[in-house]
Length: 136
Image (cartoon, rainbow, N blue to C red; front, side, top):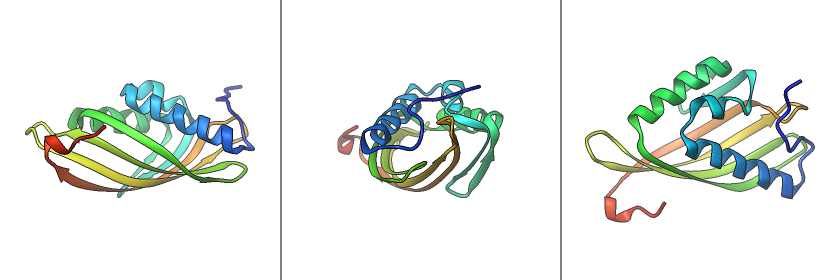
């Protein structure tokens, strides 16, 4: 059986560990690697896009990182319960036309008993920035 440690129920320490693992995986920009942290039938809402299952996660992230170049993400702990974690995040990226953006948002995560994320709900806003305003 697949497991992704740490497992719920989460403590403050293990919730923060899970967040750092997610940040590291997303910053790898490796869709297949990222998808392995999610259940096979994981449900996402990412902005107004709904994604279901690992295959769709890989496709979604592959497309995302073709559009969002020089991607760099930072996640921060917000709160947690036994099998849920809430984070705030920001990331910076560049579009093919050279313009830079910073995205801000919140995510709510729910995990199964094996530590795989079964639900991910992300609300995200983008702000165009000058390259000189980057800090990630």
